[in-house]
Amino acid sequence: MEILRILDELEAMGEVGEKWYTRIIPGLLGKTAIDAEQYFAALHQLKSSLPEEVTTASQVARDRERIVREAQEERAKILEAAREQAQLLISNDELVRQAEQRAEEVLAQSRIDAEAVRAEAETWARGVVERLENYVGRISATIDKTKKALVAQTPPSSGRGYDSRSTIDTDD
Image (cartoon, rainbow, N blue to C red; front, top):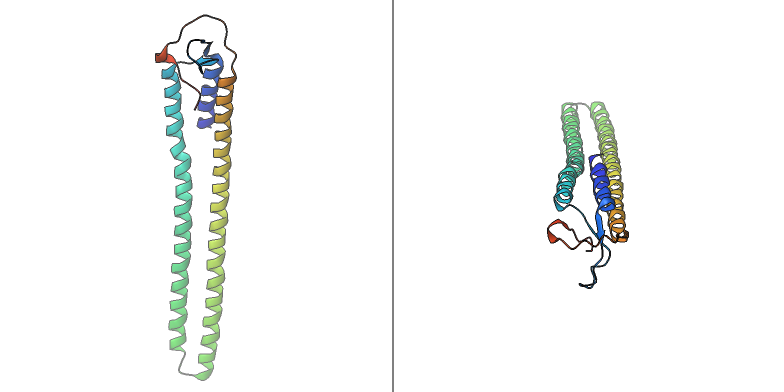
């Protein structure tokens, strides 16, 4: 997956970044310096990859609504057809009774069919949302792990100074 690849790149940046200490400014102990341009390029790729998953979830919701709407329209057509059929058969008591019975059967079947379509659409949508939620949870866990790895890195004693143009502060 594109998102996981980008997250791996971000994690690798933190692992190979230059580690440094400072005693001058409190709170800046054990930070990791990484190339800001590479970091922001990877973040931009990550952000541009996310809308595809969000779009998929949105499409699932629209599809669910469309399926339910189509089922309701079909139900209305069936009901109208049953009513028209019933009106044609009114001329005879036996025909009227049969028409009413058939209309009820059609109504009952259309309710069952509409409910089945709605239930299937909801189950499908729920499954997609659950998979998306799981996926987003894994992404969040990877981001948290990357942050912790960046913070926990032990810096070498290279004696290099602080350069604010190429450093990303990993503390939030």
